[in-house]
Image 1 (cartoon, rainbow, N blue to C red):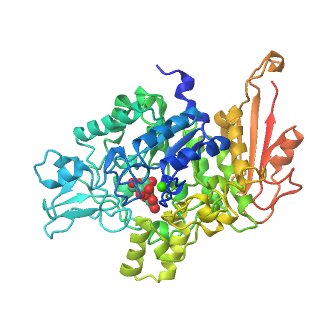
Image 2: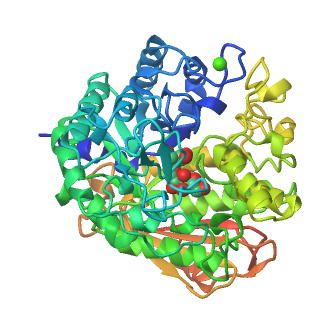
Image 3: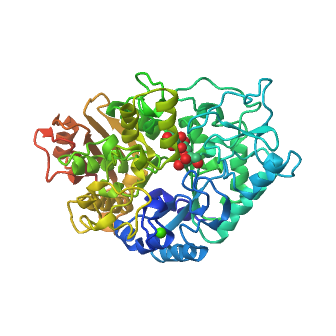
Length: 583
Ligand code: TEU
Ligand code: CA
């Protein structure tokens, strides 16, 4: 039986997501690789992160940059060998850093052996590993489901005369999880990786693996993608409990499910420890744009989320999972535009301030924070102006659909891509001001953001005022302040138009010795953090709680300006006060 702290080790951990293709290229072919990751482990140790989540490094034709897997037990030669992986794993462990793998089992690549067999004939034993349907009487797909990347979610297969389902690209056929042999093979593969010593899984679109019976058409959705129809299906939790029994419960793992379509109540079903499914989930409400205003093309023309909307969503999740589950905290990942460009202000004047403000707002919440590569440097959107600079299948298919089929002007579509395309997150990590930002000695697979000469790790690692230094301090505080991990969240001044403010109340760190235990012998004095984040470039009236807390003896814990504000919060000011009652 696992001990309690072993089970909960991930609750005061900070996760760093690596997109291997763009992280560090060790052999000059322009593609990041495993030996490149190994060469940067000391950088990550200095930052202080506990866990690395690697986007997929398995064998793949690369149609969706590795989220289309053709062999789960082999390493993509572009990233290196299994020996390179094993070395990276042991070098990370030697530094006390754990490795979480990306588990992509809602679908495989169409080049996976399972699919090659399945499509070879209707009576192949693996036919039912995937979701095949006859055409309707007019030869059309069996329903109106659309792919996340545009177009129908069904591809006609001439050989066997049926359509197969692909919620993503046509080279990513959906596995049929209702087939027990599929579950057996997936669980065997997961155990194989756990026996190699990995420390957990991030589970790609795991909320979609159980398809609704009869594959009914869902409500017409902006952009056509059928996410709501395919998420949280009838047997989803049964399959996750089986996964937990047959794999997850056998190792001290951390698990996070990527759960499109999950609301708070679904998240409780996934993360309530008594249900023995997953530890936490990625929800999508705060990264899906505003629900106010109209949209015809979903993420592309959806209005940006305002701070009050962001505050409402994140607070709902804080309250919603309190005592019932566990939040993952993220603003960035390989599918999202850079948070300082999206939610902050990436102008030279305000980029550092707003990057630190966003980090403060996120990291002092209750849950496990995720840092996406480059976020700790304040890396920005790349604003690539030519379609030839884009690499992501979603960007390229969307460009074709919107310009050719929908007839939108090119500059409109390029504006969409510059604002919210996934390519923004996939430009190479900016290590230093040498050519290609020190990412590669070759020609990078995707262009480097030209601002690498000012924004790079080398310029920040020894600068105490850098974004890097700020993230490092946030991580150190999470490792030392129990209230930052355990404290209850309480929103402050919920109607403020500029300032996102909240409080965390909980127990302080154990007293070092008895004398510290205060009058009632309370060795865990109450601890309180007050967090104030001005999301605007204007000054904001000083919240009353600031003066009240200071008068009650609170002190400044961290902030992105020197000292304390006088009478007002400065542009993009983040301020955290600590009010520790000694017993
Ligand atoms: O993403 C699933 C997902 O919901 C996002 O792709 C989202 O729908 C899309 O990015 C909106 O722009 C996961 C992976 O994170 C993503 O990289 C893969 O492309 C996708 O699944 C398929 O594996
Ligand atoms: Ca390489």
